[in-house]
Image 1: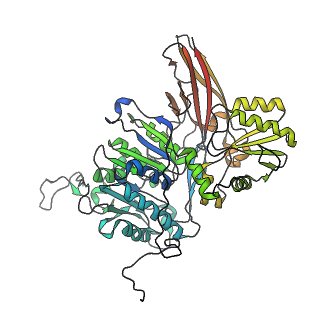
Image 2 (image 1 turned 120 degrees about the vertical axis):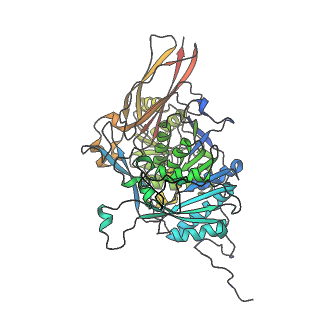
Image 3 (image 1 turned 60 degrees about the vertical axis):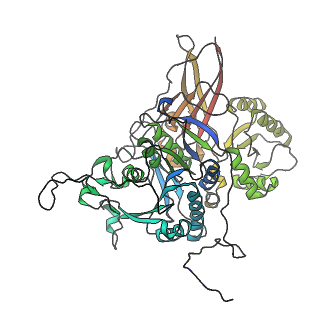
Length: 588
């Protein structure tokens, strides 16, 4: 029977298998790990105990794992994915107590790459990535739920065809044109029509029944009807072209829809290159959800969706692959007065074990060889705990599913003598809290130079590995003092020094701008009663774009009474890396 095409279809490499069958979405259900419990007073929590969720990880694994509990429960998803632009997107990171770049001519800052919007395999790889995620989003949406996809002209037309296939062409509601704002600078010099808009595609899961609250723009001052009379309506009903009408252009400050990127002094700015306005997200969230509804953003970036959902009384879930995105969003939420409690989660060792199995089929030798190759080391035979050699240094790679312990490091130090190594590099995914000090003391006693280096989560991403975007940062060293006050059962913590042991891992630009140890620190927090699992800070201090100063002594803490407690301090550096310090304390 001759082949007959019955409908138009967009096809990309990998959409079908060798037998011509539609490839199914890779799914995995992994348990989440609560890394931190953050936010405001319990009195601000939702009545049923719901805690908002900020999740660090690959959003395909995250969404797949959320389906077990949240399938058909999400009321609104806002999606601002990469645009397949081919460009690199950066974040401007202020250094130390100085003002953010662009606000003071003498400001000290540096740029770090957030993500590279280029795809091995080109547009086909990008569409395959997006199709898998759109499929999972449809399953997460409630029957009355909505999806907004933020795109531009580079891939937007392809994205619409993919979304039509997954949601059904009848689920498409509107193509919203968002006018970015006034045009100036180098963009206005283009020998072409000046690009000045993004596109937002509006879909619903069920065309016959979906949440929508019709909204209006207030009439501008002095507005009169055509006959000269006073207006009697609610305002201008918002159409599908945003920020182009005279009424919308009268909106000022936080209500203005001009892009955050062209506003010089906006209080919303985080330095994140692709940050979107709260005014745009507020319009979407208020139109397509109600207070108490669940809003999700799985490419959350700087956390605009989460911030607006929090301010408008919605529940929220946010996820992102980038450590900078998670760190920015965490601080942005903490800075909202009365922020409800929220959890910072990841998929932890379960995600790593799944990745290791999927990539290497459970072959430990292949896994070790790949890790050593990425680190620049060669395999080392004849040793039980040492896996590689790099010059005069021995290399040990920690397991994917358990933290590196002090005992594990001690065994490696013992074997250094057997292989004649005076330097030892320990690479770890996770670390036993407080492992640095005993390990350093043991190494010094044996005359071995010890380096503890973090295996970055980005190593699990093929795109990052292919581009060489992998840095094994050394664990920082903290000098803290935990001391009692004159009040009974009361103590304070002072951060006295923060040391990045190997500044050679920093670019020359960053090294030149670091004037003192405190410039490395972006935030730090104290959990007064750490129980060995989730970090629950009772005190925290952090830098924002406006408030650059940190406190170096915590507020006093009064323990409930005599007893043995464990205090944990977590310091986050300007690159978004965490360093933990753990000490037992006896309260008499």
